[in-house]
Structure formats: C-alpha cells, structure tokens
Length: 333
Ligand code: NAI
Image 1 (cartoon, helix red, strand yellow):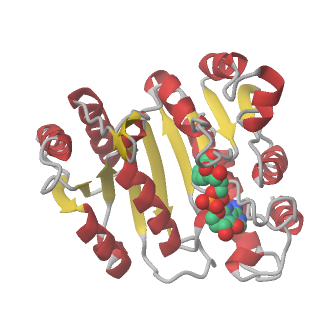
Image 2: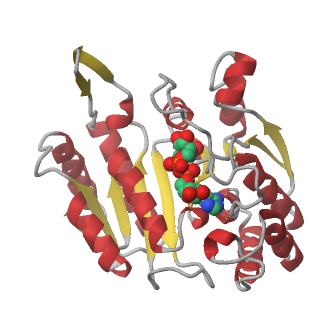
C-alpha cells in the first residue's frame, strides 16, 4: 500500500534529519508519496505567509504529516508556525512518550512516562497587549471544552496502553480559576476511568519529583505551557532533545508527527544532528497508520545503530555524523 502524506522538512537541522528519516523509512519498505511544503521564513519569502494555505489543505486532505522543526525568531512579531499549525488544524493533543532507549547513556534508568500536553490554548493563545508603556498583559485562556477534551485523551490513552496512573500537573494554588478549571475537568473525567489511578501535583513539586524519581511517574496531563517546559525537562532525563518523539493529534485521525527539539542553529548544516527524535516520531506515525510491523523493524534497526559508540551521534557520546548513523540504521534494516 502507498500512503499519500505531507512532508514539512522545516529549517535549521530540519532538512538533515528529515532526509535521514526518509532514507530509513524507504529502507524499511514503507511506501509513501510525499507532498512537500516549506513553512516559516522560507515560505514567507515565497508565498507571503509563514503557513501557506496549500500546506494546510494538504494536511487536511492527507490527515498525516511528518514535520521537521521550524525557527520562530524572538521579538520580531513573527507568530510561531508551530503554534499556528496546531491551532489552525485543531491538533489539540500533544503526545510525548519519554523512555530510556537501549544503549543511550542517561542520568536515569527505568524512565517510562508519557506527557499529554494540551496544545491549543493557555498562554499560547497569543493574546498579549501593552496596557500602558512599560506594562504588558498576556492572557492565559483555559476552557472547560479544551480541558475536558485533553483529559479524555489522556485517560483513553492510559486505558488503551494499559497505563496505571494519570497525574494532572497544575498551579491551581495560585491560578485558582484557570488551573482550577483544568483540574476540575480532569477530576470529572477521571471518574469514568475507575481502573486508572488519578492524582495531582503542583508543577514545581512535579519538576522536583521528575528529577529525583522519574521512574515513579506514568501519564502526565498538563496545560500547554507547563507541558512545553516539562517535556524538555523529561527529554533531559533520557538522553536529551535528540531522542524524544512527539505527535500532535486531532479529531478524525489527523496527526502531525515531529520531534520535540527545535532547529538547533548551533549545529545546523554540519551533519551532526541526531535524527533519532524525528525517526521515533515517524515510528509513532507508522503505528498511527497501522504499519506496526514496519514500526517495530525501524525500532530494532535503530537500537542496533545506537549500540555502538562508533555509530552513535556526538550528542549521545558517539563519533558518527548524521549520515554515518543513518547508514548504520539502513544497514541494520
Ligand atoms: P533546540 O532544540 O533547537 O536546541 C537546544 C539544544 O539541543 C542545542 O544545543 C542543540 O544543538 C541541541 N539539539 C536539539 N536537537 C538536536 C538533535 N536532533 N541532535 C543533536 N542536538 C540537538 O532549541 P532552541 O535553541 O531553544 O531553539 C532553536 C529554534 O528552534 C528557535 O527558533 C525555536 O523557536 C525553534 N523551535 C522549534 C520547534 C518546532 O518546530 N517544533 C520546537 C522548539 C524550538
């Protein structure tokens, strides 16, 4: 079967890691016709917008996209393409499984947790304005609809994947109304899943717990901003940003699969980037497309390449370039 999918290589290390992933998918026998689009600054020059309508139409039509990272310049009035994509396509759930990869050195062992981040509102609503000179207001939007939807997603995920506990992460002791509503919705949804334990942690205490005993946490349910911050923290627990995948999911099977990391301008164009995070995002995509066998094959080949420092990339203490690491995965396949 040939899948028709959307490809957004992104910028910085995006095109390098995307190229690597496409090589591996092809070697695994995954057949796809890719509709490729630029986004962000590159698209602005070409199409006058950072998120071309043709790209959005392509994702709506194909339902599934693989995406590299995209730069969001700071302080230039440039709305984040990533946030725009998630909001426009209503990709309300951001799923980030974080677990120890075989042969990847990390501070902890036995980490196996899943971050479920609300993806469309909170302080990412982009509602900021100057009240008077020197005073800026940024609005945190939390709605019952979005909070209930993401809580249902987290519990349904936990049930499907036989997870034991969902922990809602919040700061409702200070933001009594907004975060208060978020956990109120989570508590209500929890009642429909009696076999899954439910508890709550204040975000600062949750961070401490994560860096001391990450193995004790299971599914974490977070509003957008805490989810963003905590997912990078969790990436650091298992080897860094180069190894953690993500999926942005919406209703009706729509999904944009991308790594947690950004465009890594410090190593872009140097054949140094680790494609593991995007490759594991592609593995999530293969499962989403019911290509489970190919997903397992890709994972096994990846574990083989990771087992030797000579074929691991520099961020994982190895010596290999992106190309050499990809060659090793392809060879293992
Ligand atoms: P970053 O994730 O790009 O880089 C942070 C550090 O991790 C750097 O030292 C980088 O070299 C390293 N790193 C990241 N990915 C790596 C990989 N695959 N292999 C080896 N090392 C890797 O974060 P930063 O520097 O904060 O952001 C750079 C740009 O990326 C910004 O414009 C930001 O807006 C954008 N960004 C885009 C995202 C997306 O498109 N989903 C997500 C996060 C940031």
